Length: 73
Image 1 (tube, rainbow, N blue to C red):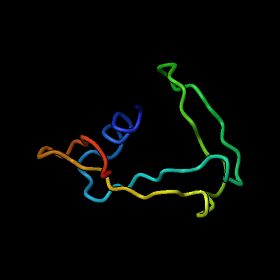
Image 2: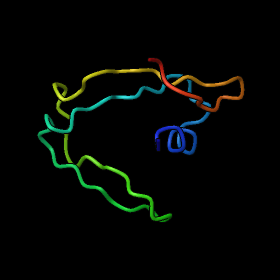
Image 3: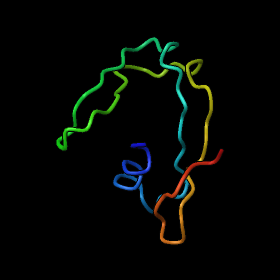
Image 4: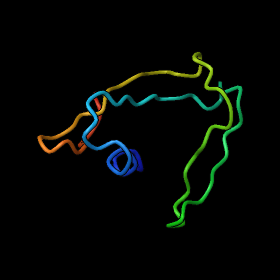
């Protein structure tokens, strides 16, 4: 649910933004859930992302104004 808000805040107008679907049970680095300034909780990976934890790579889909509206299925 947080994906599009973060992508639009940080990467709007970029053409090649990818989404990695990660299996957190396979991660070798720790995941911490931390509050942002707004109080919303976000996961952060502290350390390298091991590639065998990545289940799927998708491209974010922008609208005509460059704002992201979803990701490839």
